[in-house]
Length: 310
Image 1 (cartoon, one colour):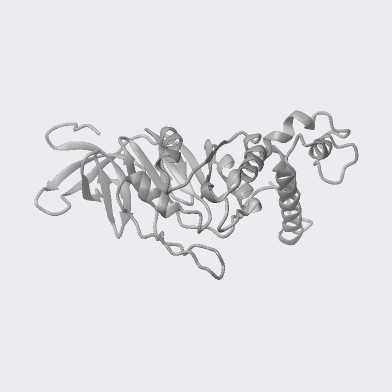
Image 2 (cartoon, rainbow, N blue to C red):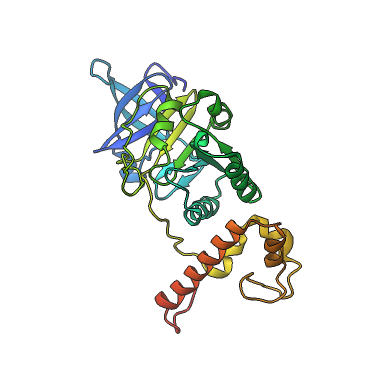
């Protein structure tokens, strides 16, 4: 970040809590309040916003200031409320706990609906066999995301991931127990947050994240950590639109017998044939059918027959 004048500086909001904004200018963090002008303009600063701020107190620790202006946003996410995100990193463990593929597809669809490029990262590769890694690579590389295997305990395995993160703001998400806290601690170079213990009874990590926070992982490189999830609702989505989010279906869909084939119970479906021949991952197709049925059942339950769908 560069200083605009002797008074004004540019920075990025990395945390919002109790009416204060922590602003990082590339070298230091300032505790700031937002000027009343934002309320008058109907604006609210968000974590991830690039801002102009002035310094009011250099004696306090941390030093204090006021956010005076919001710079234009490149993007904006809801849940989590965060601005200027460039990409998403989905972190799942290969084992301990075993990944839920249904949940993984929910995350991928959610990210795709937000028009964010996705990196799919499988942690604990040191505990997995080569066959397990090859099966996951085969299932998910075909859907158009970058697939990486890492171990947070092996520095060399993190280098390809660091290259993909460099110079970008990345929202990090995934289920509890995948190792998010450990990964953040390694990427940020210091122990920034408590690492939750893994429950031996239910094999799910205790969620240690309480708020959205942007963590510096290098020069102009930030991670946005989000609270852990146990499920992900595909709110506002129609069953008939689901196939659009399975990119590996598209090369085959045009060869189906029926136009508008949903690749479920229709005869002469080229997508189903590709699953049988190995052209499409059975893991992915099984997820698709489960989610399709869920969305169809939801429509029956929550939409009266005379309610118009818009």
